[in-house]
Image (tube, rainbow, N blue to C red; front, top):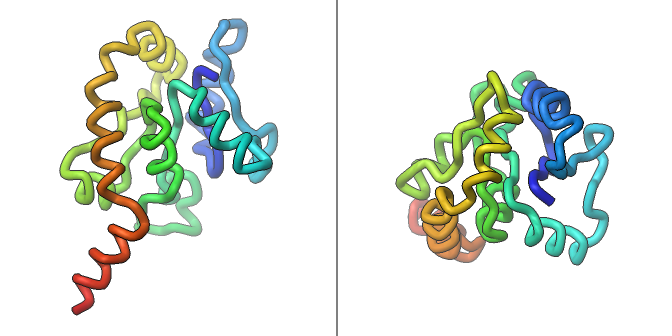
Length: 155
């Protein structure tokens, strides 16, 4: 898989990818209808994401602003994508940048998303330092680590 968008999707970006990648050899995996699960089992999910080069992630305040309002929070999709060694394209929630101390997400080109994806796929070596940094950083943010940080903040 070249690019995947699982879970909530940002429709304007998704449409740009669909139209821009139609006719290309780039394999774009996504749910045919919002809300459908593209990897029905944990094994399929793990294998599918491990085989993916680019994962598209946008926070809820972009995908569902009516529901999220001004709240922009990180979800498991980001951590799963980093841990799988994907280049993550989209937008980082503020707390993710704060948590990692840098922006681990390649900002999505909203004007020409397909050209950006094709450029990333054409020069994967350019993104290896970011992928490696994200792999190291995500290993410091397990659920157990996050829980200890929360408990420390509450005391």
